[in-house]
Amino acid sequence: DAGVIQSPRHEVTEMGQEVTLRCKPISGHNSLFWYRQTMMRGLELLIYFNNNVPIDDSGMPEDRFSAKMPNASFSTLKIQPSEPRDSAVYFCASTFAGQGYGYTFGSGTRLTVV
Amino acid sequence: GENVEQHPSTLSVQEGDSAVIKCTYSDSASNYFPWYKQELGKGPQLIIDIRSNVGEKKDQRIAVTLNKTAKHFSLHITETQPEDSAVYFCAASANDMRFGAGTRLTVKP
Image (cartoon, rainbow over all chains, first blue to last red; front, side):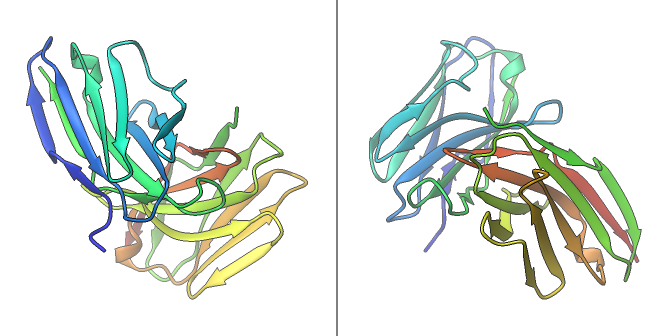
């Protein structure tokens, strides 16, 4: 298995532009999580899905952030419009059942908003 | 919701010494406690985990202990090696997983 695949690995964009981050979870996993990592705030859970349905999006910072999971093998995290304070590493993780099992993380997308 | 605190934030040890990282959690419903290792430029990787019905678990040089009454758990690395240098995260899971702030471990050769 190729693991959790995220793209792009790096993204540099100008303030105000739309940014879309992509994630392919491990085949067979039914839970998917989006995390943001910064030096100041550590690993923050943004949103998670069970069986493609968003369960908890209370960690999404504001309406500029949105996430979708149209099928079991693909998810996106969109920021529109982007701001410099959105600069961070965004991780996607997946697991089976969502509770009581370790998560497998992707390699992350390093986002820089200038 | 769950709140996980982790200490220390940085830890420097000599090669061959032991390293201990401690975490506390707040949600008594949490029943799964994994530990992750994150190397530079990579995502966190699961290295060991423990469930609430177990007090201790060991895997070669790594061991975890859990005290449910006190709501704390610890990671122990023995005979540390330079390749153990990384950031380590504890986590606690009830409905979703919450992470500690991380410990940057440096093993000096």
